[in-house]
Amino acid sequence: MRLVRGGRIVADQYVRVLDDAPIPDGVPVIVPAARFLADAEEILRREAPTGVLWPNSRRIAELAPHLDRLALVALDFPNFKDGRAYSQARVLREQLGFHGELRATGNVLRDQFLFLLRAGFDAFEVVKDADAAVFAEAVARYSVFYQPAGDRRVPALRARLQHPRTVAACERV
Image (cartoon, rainbow, N blue to C red; front, top):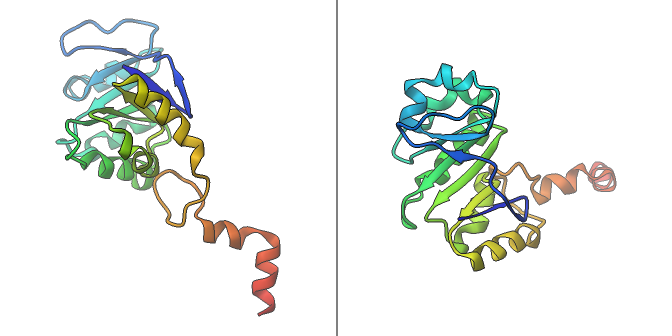
């Protein structure tokens, strides 16, 4: 599986830990949600970055007490018709203020990429090599958006109003 982050195909530094496998010391890990919630304090005491694989069937609010200590949240797309992870991403970014890596995993398709970016995802696990290249290219393709979204980009109108000449012209009217 290929990982696209910041418009580049990169090596994944995180190790996925199964439910009953020991958690290795000194390496970044991603643990399943059930295991994380069962032993969150001990898992978060580790010296290395910790991430959680969160299913779209769980309430994202369960993660709120731990977000300031999590480096990564991976949201699962079990199939292309199930978009609950988009809502989870927006809640994480806009309501809960999560600033760590937000990763899309599972059935992530090429034609959903822009929507994933706008929802606040900044990393993508991509199954097909050809899709990974398209994902990496698409990050730079669009630079202006009209609607506010979870990706923290400044919408076009707000950017225009923040520009000194535009503000001065508006004040003269």
